Image (cartoon, rainbow, N blue to C red; front, side, top):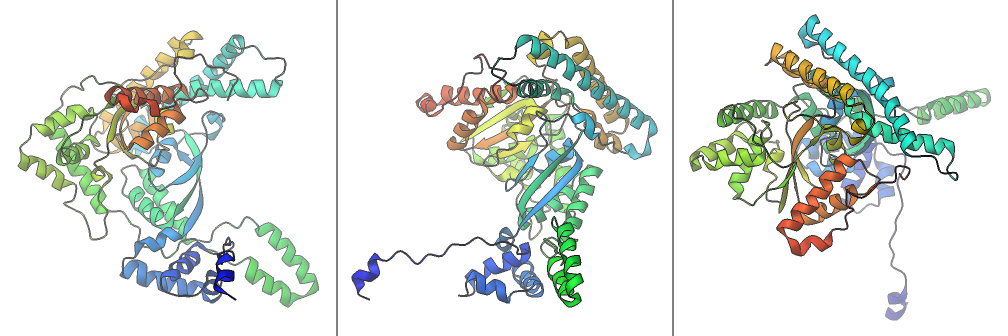
Length: 518
């Protein structure tokens, strides 16, 4: 073959998808590309579980080549966990998944989680009475808002009744989701790599909430125990048919088709409660309390684009911000008033207990050009929480910032019922939290907080992510809560950097919305 003929041939690239390989074996096979000239097919033919386990023990745990675990992806179903636990679970930057939607599902049917409150029956009684009342109001207001929307929006002749009712029902759930407490049960599915799973399990085991700790244990157990085989019933039927023909063939098929698969038994075996996370949280919480000295929470915009500052100021402020309920600007003013040595001591708290394999806390992910301090309802926050390309530093759940009231609640004449529900929930939260402020009360009280109450979160991002969030979340099909936040983000950037305003293709939240368009 001549050089000219060789140059005109199509490139000798081979591409094929891989199916039916255990996650850890797949990780081993992909990692071998850096250590062997074998093709993927050749590697997989020679690899077995024992070889994969030996390889991972050597290179992942002994040599610290942690990127190997990025190659093992695990799909998991997590069901009947509270919304509070779900928010904690998905708080990973390298996370993919879907959760039950408060827009399309009636959450009455799933029930709710009840904290133990250290066996305090009085506290449990307060809690259950409040949550039961919230669910009753959720049910009655869902009906009332649906009827209001039907009166407001007649069905077009060309629209089928089923689609019309389903669309307005979803709009009604968008409104009444504000009543759902954080105790409400939900379900979700996640697909993560094994490194993320390991860190996720350790983080959950280090959490303050008993339910979240139990969730971490269940994730670890599910990673090491046999996975559910979706085809098992069909395989059993096939094996029984083969047994009628040939017992040996049936046995061989059974060994192959019903083999137990454990998705990440090696890569998560050392995932444990992390003293670094626990001790650092306690010390930073105390430091934030000492710095702020019970100061009143100053008024701040719902969405504030923060000014630039030296990196050490940002690091110290962010470390403390996460462990209080004050606006970032108010915390920063206190941090700026400290001496350089005091700021260094604050920053040192973030790494004092850091172990050999511990990554720096997320608060050290600093230096982004755009930082928004956002105060919004918890329900709306759950939607913005899905944006993984930005850094999110969330404060604890509280009733200190008040709650949002949907316009539809007022228009439908349901404000008295709604406000009464919020006041009962807020009172229950305070009673539960103060009954045992350092123990079971502090741990269990947040579960009674409805999604209407506001939570403060720091969002750090680059320009491209700000444009993406503002464009996507300002669309009229979305929930009004995050639409307002997204549009305010655009307005803040446009005000600070008018030359960049033209990059944003946002929709004005003041425009009328077609309720039948989804």
